[in-house]
Image 1 (spheres, rainbow, N blue to C red):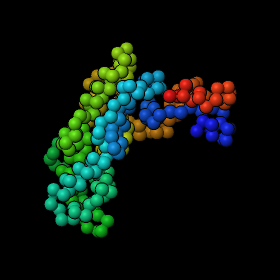
Image 2 (cartoon, rainbow, N blue to C red):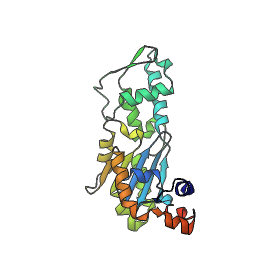
Image 3 (cartoon, rainbow, N blue to C red):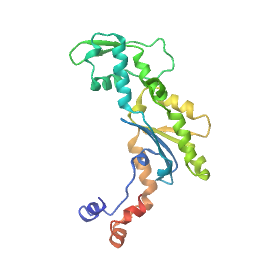
Image 4 (cartoon, rainbow, N blue to C red):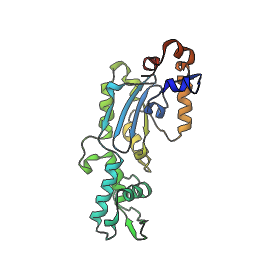
Length: 234
């Protein structure tokens, strides 16, 4: 990639960053990224990922989609049998929100592709609840314990700098109220900064301003060849 960028497109300088760094507002911190198949915990120090301290939780959007389908099947709605994985995902994204209260959930009318309707109630909050309490779907561990374990894996002298800055990212973190719940549970220390990565443009601009002084220049590439990428970026 570096060879193509320098020798074909004649860029002046470049730098390769791992995905979690692009979600991080800070040069030190921990990114909790919950995606389709798993939730990753990535500590970052001086803009570098600490691979020896990274952890993952075997819980992702696919598990939540499957749980939604199971709940709809158990509801007894005759039209729920036509719900496939893609529809489960769409229902999850449109109807669900986080709440730790299981009562007074406003019904949600969802129209299926065939024109039939299903009414969702408790399903709207049970699926997001499983993200923070995986035991509901038979999964071990949880976000909060993995966060603590990730911090413990970091060197003792940098733990305080990493644990006080947390970035929440990934599609599963977009449920309404989920961010505030995680913030309340993790932010027991008043010095803890917990942010979302909603504003991608701002974050990327912030990151590149910080790493601008460590970019690989064309002159460095010419002097050292493609191997300089492995020395400066990874």
